Length: 168
Image 1: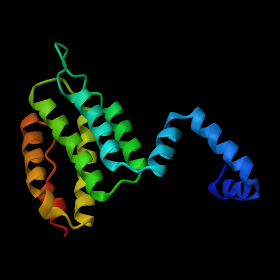
Image 2 (image 1 turned 90 degrees about the vertical axis):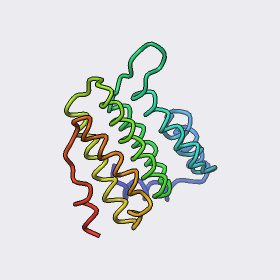
Image 3 (image 1 turned 180 degrees about the horizontal axis):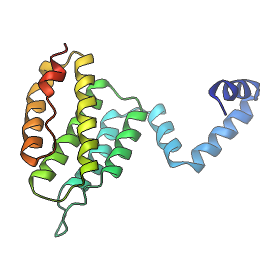
């Protein structure tokens, strides 16, 4: 169903029917519950911490087991976080955190699939563009340099961050 058709149907519904539909959605989908809780009581710090916790679980050693490094879990966490529409600074921070942890993971010689580091490279490149568009290059230049050096050491990519940021 298109957004326009849904909006038309929602406008035709009574308030009670809309409340009933929202409650059914709240009860049936965890994503909807998380969104409504965030919408009614926005706590960007909590949402950011939740997302970073997923990254930490995937890219750092816990106990005796090596990290799994599943990019799919990290991408899902990032998508869920960004769906809440947090501030640009928080989005950038979370994205850079993902790249930092993934690069450190690679330096420790844990196996990572090529498609995974290609995804991380794309997230990093998109983050650089977001930083550039937000005019925050000076604020994040040190972190960008560290990520770039760590990624090169890990053999992930030869992405030229300076070239991307030079478009300013």
